[in-house]
Image (cartoon, rainbow, N blue to C red; front, side):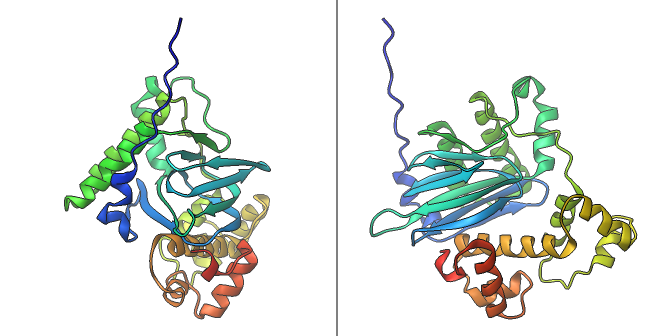
Length: 287
């Protein structure tokens, strides 16, 4: 007779009382990825959120619903939402009663995923890359890895590139054991490459002409290539600016005016109008 062992609920109390998570934080390095805290105090749904990079979200308090392919996936406290690059989904964050939704997000740059696939071919093996959002229930193993980054941060360690790289690789290895792998061989489209370029300096007054030059194209060829991908330069720039604005609203305590300026809008009212039109809620209601 086989004994059934109930999965143990991850002990999240150390993270909930962690000084590092009492205030927002971000750790990130180009070509590797980002780790950041997320806090939301009001129940709301953000429409058509685009996840440019593959990521995982650990729910510390409250719950999160991610609806991709018109099917909602629910992550409760202690669960992990695993989200492939390029996912577009409606995202609902539900705070605990009289408190907040709190989580930690880890995103993985495509170059890191490629390097991971090349370094650990036997681990990745013939596993099918994720094509949609997956929820891992009570993912204590991944919570432990996230906890090590938090403890490093609290110990006063500067999270250099190499340390962040190894911590994110730990997460990817743990995911692979659970048969969750991201696509490490995916070649980014021009749309994504342009998004990465402009995201490096969103406050800059980018023009299609100078971006086309960065990709060794004439402006006409550049615009035709984007049209074949059913987008435009102005749409890519707006998406990058508003996406970064959403991230800053939920991962920092910056005021809306400073966020608007940081992502390239000269007036908070313009940012607010564009944000509401894009996501279905006002910036003030997204945090």
